[in-house]
Structures are given as C-alpha cells and as structure tokens.
Image (tube, rainbow, N blue to C red):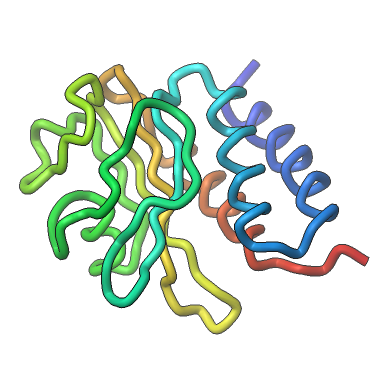
Length: 154
C-alpha cells in the first residue's frame, strides 16, 4: 500500500476520533498516539508548544524528550521562525540540530496554528532511519495537524 493511501486512512481515523472532544490537549494526544503507532518509521512523535516565549514539550510518545528547546536553535524553532514545515533527511546535516536522543537520524516538523493562524507550537516526528520523511509526509501531516483546532464535530 502506498504512503498516500495510508495517510488517507489515518486522516479519516484521526478526524473521526477528534469529533469526540473539543479539548485541544486531548486532540493532540490522539493524533500523537495514532501517528506513533501506525507509522512504522516514527521513532518519536510529539507536540512542542509555545509557553511564555519558550518551546515546551507537551504530549509525546517515544523515548524521553527534551523538556524545553533552546530558543532559535534546532529544527522545531526553525519551523516556527520560517513559518513552514521542515523535512530533514539527515539531522547531522542540520545546523544547530538538538539531539534529544542520539538514535534520531531524520526529522519532520510541522507548525501548529490556532484558529487565528498564529503558530502556537509544532508537531515533531523523528525516525531512527535516514531519509524517512518526504513531501508526501509533509502534505499529509500538515492536514492532520490542522485538525487540532478544527472544532466542528456536529
């Protein structure tokens, strides 16, 4: 089965799950759980959220995470500062990469926007393999992350 078909199924599953709650944190938890357990190359899956100008870990699955990411350093801050999704085929080649776990080899980070379009955090996904993520992952993960604040479960 192709990557697009898998993501289409995951999107539908996540969208149906999120209809059960308007709580933003519960919605983030459900997204993380589904993505972490249904995509075999996801080694660490979680949200970092902006709190008082700091990027703090929220919900995640995988090994212990960095609790706070140094400002303007690493892939997560780069996604926020550039206002775009960032795909990193090899984290060793990304200037200022923050190694919360040395087993991480590739990464994708998607900005999380509230209903006003303001970036309030990021979805961060790491893989133990090089080149795990591509534009197809980016496209689908952006759609999935957009569901966090899409509250229309009537």
